[in-house]
Structures are given as structure tokens and as C-alpha cells.
Image 1 (cartoon, chains in turn red, blue):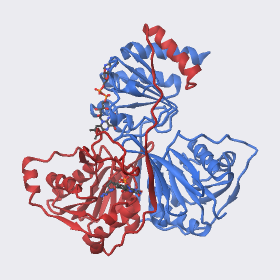
Image 2 (spheres, rainbow over the protein chains, first blue to last red):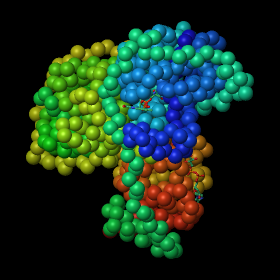
Image 3 (cartoon, protein in one colour):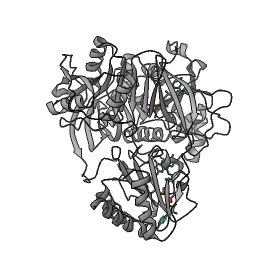
Length: 260
Length: 326
Ligand SMILES: Cc1cc2nc3c(=O)[nH]c(=O)nc-3n(C[C@@H](O)[C@H](O)[C@H](O)COP(=O)(O)OP(=O)(O)OC[C@H]3O[C@@H](n4cnc5c(N)ncnc54)[C@H](O)[C@@H]3O)c2cc1C
Ligand SMILES: Cc1cc2nc3c(=O)[nH]c(=O)nc-3n(C[C@H](O)[C@H](O)[C@H](O)COP(=O)(O)OP(=O)(O)OC[C@H]3O[C@@H](n4cnc5c(N)ncnc54)[C@H](O)[C@@H]3O)c2cc1C
């Protein structure tokens, strides 16, 4: 069974983010540490587990982005993915979720996997849209925010639990399908030293729009500009004995902040 | 009506629109400068629900009622609504952020070849163009987004937009278009209900109480639940508390948990790590109680008490009781 995992490289969550002085639509990437988006690690882990459980198969990591993205693909390979595909072209520089989904879908059509795994959302742009849009472009069924999955013995259907408000909805989905991973699906492994060494020998194929028969046009959604977060007004530490402090807090919440 | 502003209805699955629809209809009405329309895909539309949507400002409710709409399945909902969009050419399509709306609206936008601004927290008209504001990079930056063409498609973060004032004098015209209902490939096996906490849903609650590693153990959350019962709050947790197994993951607030934007957030024994802030920094009023005066959460808190939460929580609960029993 072949599985494609869509992997996005994102700034480490703890990194300082500054808007670029030269381009108000972009962030200053100097000094940023890049990581694999945490939800995509759940997706990679799940794909590897499916392969290991079945004792056969292939896991292909796919990422769209500039040269730096190779590092994220190397991490995916170090975790155990078999090979990687890098959609790397300036024509994709302003891709929105739909253009991203269209590019990924074109690769998936060539690869013809039985299953595509994504993260619930990329933790930088936070759209939470690419997985569902990918399914729409491919005309495949999809389930978002999955908490568990089980592929049946002959790889014809997958049973998934998707998280919704107030519960879990369990579906049987015929393959091929797109699933997006929610936290709680699994605990991602750390790459072993052997994995890291082995990853250096694995293939990362560069793909251009022409290879996919695509000519990426202007995005449907455009960044107009980025703005720094307006500073919150300075807060107030309420001093004094606990019994007085809580009294004052409740008064302030009611009378000043009108929050209670 | 062509060029209408549409609001897709999120409901409680029992025939009542959720309260967040007052925010979506309110904001859409403000942007449209008048009429907005609601679009309700459901297996049971109730008259009361339609009245409610009208009272919140919908001049028309498009009711797409069919047993196949429950539970939500993208393969059914998307072609059904896309057919209506093709006929009616709305100018904008809005929905609140909920788990199914996130997926639905994304798939719909892909089918229509239109742009999507997900989890938006602000809108403005600049000339004839809609500009959406959305937090990116863990809420450290705000991105202003604009569309290449209509329909403008966006989801709205709950609790951020000013709700429409309900007015019983207003009523909605009802339209029941017939659309093709495709047969989905995926089939529901079962729905497992969570044990209800009896408290509001985390993402919808107007007040959220959050307990971090400072809570010291799962048994101590009962003091937060007591306070929650008094003020009608939801109880959430930091990742440290979730990873320790004290609370289920669905209660995690932050970058890898839920994004919340309540009127009031109260954090107890939460240090205020950047990933936690990512999920709650758009809260209107933030209160922090921490024994460490250097805890980063005090940097974004409106009110802080430096002290032991095990002393503060019971005393504060009593104070809330006194206030609310008056
Ligand atoms: C220089 C620059 C310019 C940009 N300009 C625009 C713009 O004009 N308009 C705009 O809308 N956006 C723009 N973006 C952001 C855009 O590229 C988003 O990253 C893209 O829309 C995907 O959205 P998301 O990251 O929120 O993914 P989500 O929808 O949150 O991602 C969900 C899942 O899809 C998969 N996925 C997402 N992205 C990728 C990827 N690149 N490769 C592989 N898998 C992926 C992952 O599995 C991920 O977990 C720009 C970004 C950069 C760096
Ligand atoms: C990729 C990634 C994603 C993450 N996503 C999230 C996320 O979604 N949500 C999230 O919350 N975190 C997330 N984290 C983790 C985050 O970095 C922090 O580790 C976490 O938020 C810390 O939780 P905490 O504040 O409860 O614990 P701590 O940082 O340990 O803080 C506990 C606080 O309690 C105080 N305290 C202790 N005892 C008392 C007492 N008796 N009275 C009063 N105060 C007391 C201490 O002074 C301290 O400030 C993520 C991390 C990474 C790397």
C-alpha cells in the first residue's frame, strides 16, 4: 500500500517572528529555525505505522516550498519515509491554499497512492484547509481531525474517528481518501541515528510545475500586508492579602472590565 | 439575490442555530450595509430556528433540508451548496469556525475555485474590496488578506465579532430550493458522545478557566470546575497538564489545541508559553494567577495576582458567588 504524506515546513513555534523591513507582505526569515509542522509529524508517524503493521508498502513525503524545505523532507526521511518529492519553483512562491492543494493533487495523481495523510493545520498560516481542498481537487472522500484510523486487511477501506464538538464520529471510507491528523492520533517517533544516516541516501526528487502539467496562476487569496500585533494595554498586578486581592479583582472585573 | 452576503448556519444538530450565528450574521450585516441571507443545510430545520435567524437579521433563509445532511459529509454538502452558489452568485460566503465548517468551507472554496480566509478576526471594506484580518505565526502577526474575485469566502473566529441584536420584529423569507443530493462514498458507523461536563463548550464559552502544571494533579481540577459552575465557564488546560494525562486533549488550549477567544480568560498555574498564548491571546480580558511574578503570562494579563492558586481559587470562587447571588 502506497501512502503520501503532505509535509509543511514552518518556523519553530518559539522563534521570534518579525515583519520584513523590505517587504511588508513577508516575514524576516533571518535567524528562524525551521521545523516540520507538528501535526504533519502525526501524519508521518501514522503512515509509518500503517506500513509497519502491513509489513509492506511505501511512504512518500511531499512538500511545496523553497530550497530550505529539503531539510524538513530529510527529517521525514529520517523518521522512516522511503522517498520524498519537493515541489520547488518560484512560480509557487505566492501559492494560496488552493494553489498548494492543486500542486499537491497533481503529484498525487502521478503517484496514485491509496491514502494521503495531512496535518490538521500548518501552525504558521493556520488555514486548516489544504487537506480538504486536496480531497476536493482529487474528488476523493476526506475526514478531518482524525483521532484514530484502521485500514482493513485488503486495503480497500479505512475506518476513522473524526473529532467533532461533543464527540467522535466514526466512518468507513473507501480508499483512496485524504485524512488530516489531529493531536492524540499517535506519539511521533524521534529519528534514530541510523535513520538520520540512512536519510542522506534516500531520494528527494525536485518537481517543477511543467512536470505536472501545471502553470500556477495568480492566487485567489492574496496577502495585502502583515501587521505587528497591537500591544495589549499594560496590565495591573493586584497586590495585598489574598482575601483583599480577590475582592478587588472581582470588583475590577465587574465595574472596570465589565467581563463578569 | 445575486450579490447577496451568505451566512452558512451552524446548528446544535437538533434544529437550533448556534449562538455564534448572531456574530456571523451581525458582522455580515455590517459589511453588507443591510441585508444578509442565511443558508441552512440540515436534516431538520425548525420554525423556531428560522425565526431566530430572521431575528438576527437574515432577510432570507435558504433551507436545504434532507436526511442526507446529517452527519456532515463533505461529499454531500459541497456539491449541494455549490449548485445553489452557481444559481445565485452570492458575493460573500461566511461561516463560523467549528470543526465541520472548517472542512466544509475549505472544500467548497476549492470546488468554486475561490479564495478562503480561514479563522478571520476582522473585516473591512476598502473601496469595493473586502479585506480580512487573520492571525498567523501563532498569533504573533496579523495578516491582511484580499480576494482575486467574488465570492469572498471566509470563516470567522467565535466570540470576536459583535453579535446582532435579536429583534422579534424582523422575520425571514424562507426559500426551499431543490438541489441534487449525491450519495457519499463514506458511511457513518457510529457517533461516540463525550461524557458531558455540564459546562459550556470550550470554543464557544464566554468565560474560560484554564489550569496548567501548577494545578499539581488531575484531582485538583475540581476546584476550577466549582468556580466554572458559579460563573458559567468552560474549563481548559495547558499542554503540560494534558501531556501529564490530567485532562483529555480536547481541553487543550493553544497552538496544538483549541483556539479560544472568550470575553474573559482566567489562567491558574499557567506560565504563558508562546504556544499557549497562540490559542488565547485574542481573549478580551485576561486574568493570571501564578506564584512566580516573572511568569510570562503576566506580560499579556490585564489583571494578575501573584500567589498560590490553592489559596486564590477558593477565595475567588466565594467572591464570585457573593457577587452573582446578589
Ligand atoms: C513568501 C510567501 C508568500 C505567500 N503568499 C501567499 C498569498 O499570496 N496568499 C495566500 O493565501 N497564502 C500565501 N502564503 C501562505 C501559503 O503559502 C500557505 O502556506 C498555504 O496557503 C497553505 O496554507 P496553510 O499553511 O495554512 O496550510 P493548512 O491548510 O493549515 O495545512 C494543512 C495541511 O496541508 C499540508 N500542507 C499545507 N501546506 C503544504 C505545503 N506547502 N507542502 C506540503 N504540504 C502542505 C500539511 O499536511 C498541512 O498540515 C505565502 C507564504 C509565503 C512563505
Ligand atoms: C510544538 C509545540 C506545541 C505546543 N503547543 C502547546 C499548546 O497548544 N498549548 C500549551 O499550553 N502548550 C503548548 N506547548 C507547550 C508549551 O511550550 C509549554 O511547555 C506549556 O504551555 C507549559 O504549560 P504550563 O504553563 O501549564 O506549565 P509550566 O510552564 O510548567 O508552568 C506552570 C506554572 O505554574 C506556576 N505554579 C506552580 N505552582 C503554583 C501554585 N501553587 N500557584 C500558582 N502558580 C503555580 C509556576 O510558577 C509556573 O509558571 C507546545 C510546545 C511545542 C514545542
